[in-house]
Length: 331
Length: 304
Image (cartoon, rainbow over all chains, first blue to last red; front, top):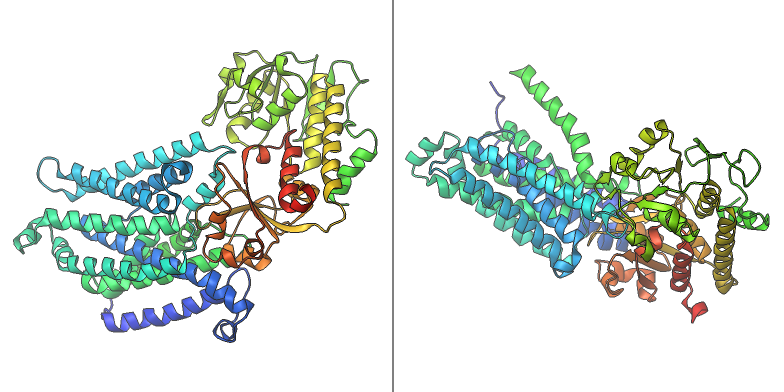
């Protein structure tokens, strides 16, 4: 029997406190330590360093983490498979391929738009392909969707690898591209940071609207159908929403695995299986986690940076394994 | 001793192109045994007539030594010199096939240990008795040593000495242009994504040396080799000059437009220069041209 579950209010309060601490730490740590008293205090060089250089990136990290864990939550809900996440299901691979094309062939699109637009087209296109395969024969089969996603992810990753090898020589940005693909939060402009807020709210609201349907889907397609949910539309909506979240995350953070897998799982253990509370909780927790990871990436070997995707796997992997063992013990 | 002093010593010795490694037997005789960049002993029986080489830097050295006729095949990534483009390719971006190389019956391979697929050629050919000469280029003096080493391996010592001497003269000429003014601090961006993943170089990279010869002081010379740095690390070091290497150079304004960068000293003072990456990251004879381009970016008033 699992322990008593928390309700959303106290859980969000705990997450909010953790979040404030994480933001404070992240703003203070970097290529140089700046204490909160300094960045909250008198104007000066250090204050400028934090607010001009660090804060936008911290915001981007939160945004990336929130999008990734929301995408993971949606995919796991739709496919009723604990392994489902953007990286397994082709949408991240599609975003990665699109972004690689944008970075390798910069003359293709206006530079300001190439990366996010191509990442979005890649994630969107891959998700549509998976849905199309799942739809063949009329009946929806989650297992088939999942397999199609895994196969497509393999194909797209291979294409990306091929592109990198063929176009990667002295005359291209190879090192920057490889590093970005291992995960690296980019620094947005202040105006772009302000744009994150509405996006997050919109994504969260849309996901929250799907929550009852995803809960019903957890009981099986037939049960969901009988509860009055239009399963194909529900699945398509959730997958495309997850693709959108993945594309946004990839275009600002590169390819960062594990966040979309770990965060929804941990929160499900903590809050229970209902998607209503899980949507906001996952977004906040994923964002906070990513803020912490990016802080380590920026500051642990400053002035050098570590790709954030390596950190999520190296730190997140063992943490997740330990949690799995711990839960096994308790049950 | 700094590397630059070391390079100067190499020149001052008059035998600037003196063998960097011991040569067995009197000069001009075969067989000869050389020690290559991996400290491997390489025995060459007679003046090589069928040379296979991969990587732009190695091809450029061989062609600059006037050995074009003796090069039978090259790696597929080479874009310079123009006459090299007609040579058959033994592979490239996707790897180098030992079988394709063997088909040219080479009597010398010249490689650089920077690519796993190229390393895959070392074992089979060494076992088959074909000498494999490995070149490395951690700094500018080693580029000159490579020229000397290839000269010894091919019997082109005289050309190597001439080429090396000429390169040093050109480097000294560039230095003479800016000497008298203090070096300027500089951030050299070797690659970047739009808003991050800023790649630069530190000590142990020939470009760090090249900057020093051009009158620059690399703000990241405390790092080793190729490194990624954060935007705020660049802001903290606030270089006087920013040099960005790009495949297809965009206007310098694109750098100033990066979030926050308009506050950097180099941007405020208009000292941002975007250069075509081209040969600047190829550690061959054209490094002199890279140094000249860096010097123009660092001390434009001296090159007016």
